[in-house]
Length: 204
Length: 204
DNA sequence: TCTGCCTCTTTCCATCGTCAAGATCGGGTG
DNA sequence: CACCCGATCTTGACGATGGAAAGAGGCAGA
Image (cartoon, rainbow over all chains, first blue to last red; front, side, top):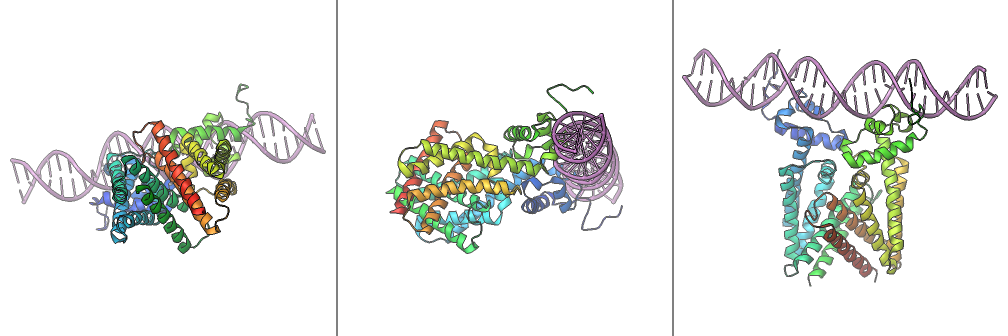
């Protein structure tokens, strides 16, 4: 059997290729349209090849979700670093990064936000999600360093819920059905500012 | 072929039976474990019987989601009616009802919250979701009747996002991993109270 | 009674995830 | 350098799925 250089018997980077094709497939077809065989097809390998790199389709989905959390953490950090306005500005910046990542990767974000419903759970995934939570908790801490632990927790609940809930409802079409992208950004920023004000007030 | 009375050739209530078995199956197996054939099996009919009542598996899922929104609206109304404290109390009550429904039907709630990701869209589903939004908008309106339309919208964004985000993160395990149910309820009520205070402040 | 239509069953097909067996290649060992 | 072992990939198969097609059963109105 002849075999071109582009498709050697041994792929060499199959794991990465599957992650890449899988991510694209996820955004294209949605969670319920995601199939392992199509991932393999796009990576140019046979349908059974992924088995060596991922124990099951859930294992691949968990990897996608874990990398999503890594990227989400990076987006939050980047956006916070660019923000002005001290600790409060950083908290808002994290929110902006969070929303931007979700808007840019809606299906992946949805997968990450319902791994329980999709029965996904691996150590790497849990760790990646923990990192995002730690980042957020630190930002809240910086805004109200002298508040009690309970207040800090309540404010983290509050800000996390506001940001996550807003972008989730937006992506699901429950918010701003026919508004322009510009108007929606304004609504998002307005929410972030109300959120920040609430936290600041709770601290003093 | 003999056929018992319990399983006559014509079921008679198959649509309702499929909705019932489908809802149970959804909570048991999660969205990705949901299958049409298992629904049919539980309803005691052949695997092709559902086709007459639902054009596709997505059609059945959309029906489940639509009924979920109806029930969600009822839960919000009931809980608001029982609440004290005027308009503000009613808004908080709606939030309590929203969270209670989600906590009681996590998989269904997840389906409802990601119908876009699951590519579900029927008129009945959209209408049911609209009803929930209208209920919420009316409750916000009652708290700050003299505020501008924009303020009302921003506050509806804010309260909707807070409540939805909190219960979503909670059900996904991102909030309160090892806390007791009692402690989690306290955190939820604390969030609702902070939320209500923000709205009231925005109105005056 | 008979006829037509709605409902359900049976059978079939393409596709899916996973497993088992065989083919291929590359790197370490002799 | 030749060999060989194991990691990687292919092929083929199995049971299960969603959906379509064709036929059987039962009810309601003529």
